[in-house]
Amino acid sequence: MSQVLPGDALPVHDLIGIGFGPSNVAMAIALSEHNARAGGQGAISARFFEQQPRFGWHRGMLIDDATMQVSFLKDLVTLRNPASEFSFLCYLQSKGRLIDFINHKNLFPLRVEFHDYLEWAAAKVEGMASYGHEVVGVAPVLCDDAVEYLDVTVRSEEGLEVHRARNLVIGTGLRPFMPEGVERGDRVWHTSELLAKAGQLEGTSPSRFIVVGAGQSAAENVAYLHRRFPGAEVCAVFSRYGYSPADDSGFANRIFDPAAVDDYFAAPEDVKRRLMDYHGNTNYSVVDIDLIDDLYRQTYREKVLGAERLRFLNVSRITEVKETPAQVRATVRSLVTGEETFLDADVVVFATGYSPVDPIGLLGEAAGHCLRDDEGRVRVERDYRVATDPGLRCGIYLQGGTEHTHGITSSLLSNTAIRVGEILDSLLDRGVTSASTEAMTY
Ligand SMILES: Cc1cc2nc3c(=O)[nH]c(=O)nc-3n(C[C@H](O)[C@H](O)[C@H](O)COP(=O)(O)OP(=O)(O)OC[C@H]3O[C@@H](n4cnc5c(N)ncnc54)[C@H](O)[C@@H]3O)c2cc1C
Image: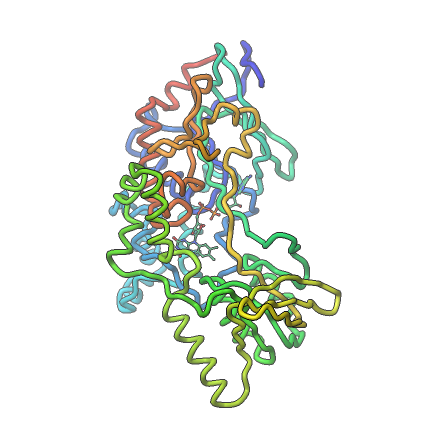
C-alpha cells in the first residue's frame, strides 16, 4: 500500500475504466455527453484501458448471417437519451443506410452490423481510451489513514505504467468456459475463437466436426461449420433431448427492463433464485426459434436425400477428448444407456459458454476492503458500487459480475445505457469532478 507524499505528482483521474467493451464504451459516451453539458468546471476526467489492440466485440463469433439477440433500440444510449448522437439510428444515417434499414422492418440487426456500430461509437470517444493496455494490478493509496485513491498498473508494449484514480469502473466481461480437464489446442476450440480457427482450415478438407453444447452459440457453430465445410459431417453433442427455443415473448422480455433491476435488487434471496429459474430461458442454454427451425429443416432434407451430414447425439455427454497432431478422439457417453462411443474428428468445438470472473480479483490489497455476503459473493449497492468498509473512500463500480444482486441483464447489452447513467449519477452525487481533484495538491 503506498502513501501519498507531499510532492507526489501523479495526476488523478476522476475515473479509470478497466476494459473498453460495450459497457465501458457506453460509460465513456455518458461521460462525454455529461462533460459537454457541464463544461470545464463540472467535467469528469476519465481514462479507459483495453487490452485488445483495437475495439473488438466477440470477433470470433461474427458469423456473417448471425443476428443480434436484442433490439437495436437497446443500443449504447437510446434508453437513457433517445436524442443522443451515439445511437444506432445515427450510425445508420452516417452510413447512408437509414432508409434501407427501415424498409427492412427488423428490430434485430446482423451481429456484424452491430459490431460496426459499436466500433463507430467507440471511435467517437477513443480520446478517452488506450488500446493495447492491459490492467495487471490495482494498489490502494492511503491518505489520512483511508484509501483515497487507487493506483492502476497497466502493461503495454512500452512497459508498465501507473495511473491514479478516485474511482474505478470494471467492465472486463466474461471468460470463455471449458469443462474441467479439457485443454484448448489446435483441434480443441472454444466457440469464442471459431472464425479465426476455422480460417486456418481453409484449403484443407476436414471430414468431421463435433460441437458440444445446446445454446445459441452451439447451434450457430453447427450451422456455420455445416455451411462452410460442405464435405464435412457435423455432430452436435448435448445432454438435452433437443434444442430449446429462447423465450422472447413480450411479458417474459420484461425481465430485461430497467425496472426489473429495481425489483430484482429489492427481492429476497429465494425470490431472486426463483426469478432466475423462471426466466433463465430468456437467455441461457436456449436458441432462436428461427435457427432451430432452419437446422431441423436441413437435417430432414438430408434424411430425404440420403446424404446425412448433420448428426445430433442428444442425451449424451463428452467424457474425454484426446488430441493428436492428426485428429482428435472424443468419447461420447449416452446418458440413457451409459454406452460409450468413440468419435474421431478434425476438430471439437466447445460451445460451453462463459463464466463470470471475480471482479475483485484485480484489486490486490484493495480487495480486503470490499464486503462480501454470506455466500462469499461481492456485495454491490444499487448504484453498482461495491460495498466497502470505511477504510476505502474511492468508488469501485461494476459493469458485469452483478447477476446475484442486479439480475439477468448484468452481462448483457439490454440495460447498458441505463446502467451507465446510474453510475454517472452516483459519481455526481458523491461530488466527483475534476474541479475537486485539481484543487487537491500534494
Ligand atoms: C457471441 C456473443 C453474442 C452475444 N450477443 C448478445 C446480444 O445479442 N445481446 C446481448 O444483450 N448480449 C449479447 N452477448 C452478451 C455479451 O456479454 C454482451 O454483449 C457484451 O459483450 C457485454 O459487454 P462488456 O463490455 O460488459 O463485456 P465484453 O464485451 O466482454 O468486454 C470486456 C472488455 O474488457 C477487456 N478486458 C478484460 N480484462 C482486461 C484487463 N485486465 N485490462 C484491459 N482490458 C481488459 C476485454 O478485452 C474486452 O474487450 C453476446 C455474447 C457473445 C459471446
